[in-house]
Image 1 (cartoon, rainbow over the protein chains, first blue to last red):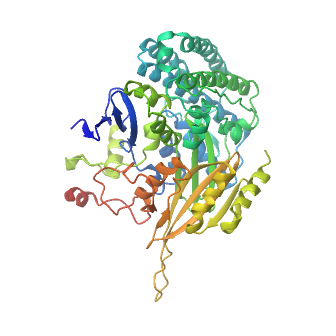
Image 2: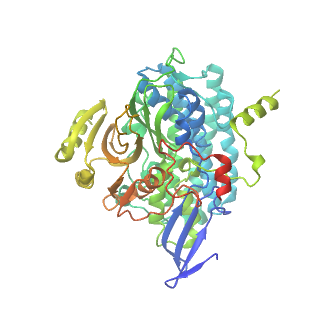
Image 3: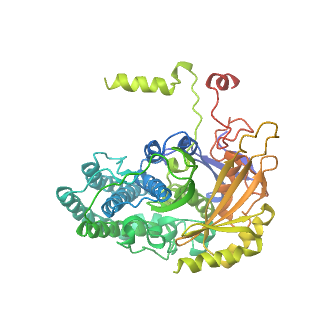
Length: 393
Length: 166
């Protein structure tokens, strides 16, 4: 049954597969007519067991595993992990490596925010903005591909430093791309804040006050759009943010429009920061050696992912594999806020409100049990290895 | 803000319930509390407006293998409630024996803890009293009851046997 009656109210299930949301999540909205009176969330459709998986892999193998938690903010996950491991190993990373990590992190934020801008515009029915912003996003994807060789999983980090350098040629390429992006971003700011039809979908929709944001534990741009001034790059600076501080972007209105404005301003802030770091690139080595076995202990590292605070807890028992890695992603925090402030809005606003927090499902979901009806489809690690050898022969 | 001052402030708030307090790292303070005091300790942090709950980490600490002739010691679950304020991280550590992994919910104080508590119940088998929502969050609907994947004794299903059961 798609809907069911309960106390004269309807429950409208949305997802796990739904054309309005591109990733799997299941929501149940209790509605009274058009107005939402209650909401609940069920995640886990892309849960892959990564936290458990880390306990079976060496410190180095985990760099690659954790990078694959998310396809959008892959670099920031590994940054949180490698910095935590470096803290445990008491290794000091060269300043040039920290600068490169930070540049890649900011480029990633640009690509993530532009991706979000397109998705959110699409949910609002503004498909030309979606297509333009995704076309322009290719500029930053090209930059990432040029400096790292990859569009998505850049593999910039290794334990103890970074894998590649940014030379003058790459630097010029980045700067040229940023000039173009800055011009486009200013244009988007104008469109988002002046287009009447679009404002109709965003202004005063999904309002979350500062008190609510704190009460509900919202993080990242979602919280900053409600006036919460927490940005981990500023409140607990790491890597090159210690030497190159950022300006925290906030807005007071707390509606969907504010979430657009905050993210677009953060794009401009990222351009400024990357230019500043490129102007003052520290010289030196790219990496230092990290031992294969990490001394016993536990540590915590927090970073500002494009969606908000990302938390890593790493515990070592002195061996070549971690004892426990705990990941708390920003989307998980923002879910509890969205299911609360959704109440009282029209059902038709739900896709926009959901998209407004920039949800990332892969980030929450790190465990799955794979079930296949056809037994022969289940591959063992050995089968996969042999297949890999065959494939690239 | 002065890191040392913030950390001290957090430690002082928790002083009435602290079994022990340690500084594992420059910016971190670990405070061990008994489970019956957890609720009051969290309430004190919230009332003072000290930082925010960033995450709850679950740890499985199985007992070390018993020496010959000795009865096996009981393992325990350890829950870490991480509160952050700027650079400072204060962690409340609560230890629960395998035989009775129950704990009061903190959702009445911090409503957003519900998702973290659901995670702990599913993945570690912690029994949380008075938590508002006990439904599954991340595991599949057909996941067997009583199997908690993040416990150390879970090493995966034997593939064919697990398939047949379904």
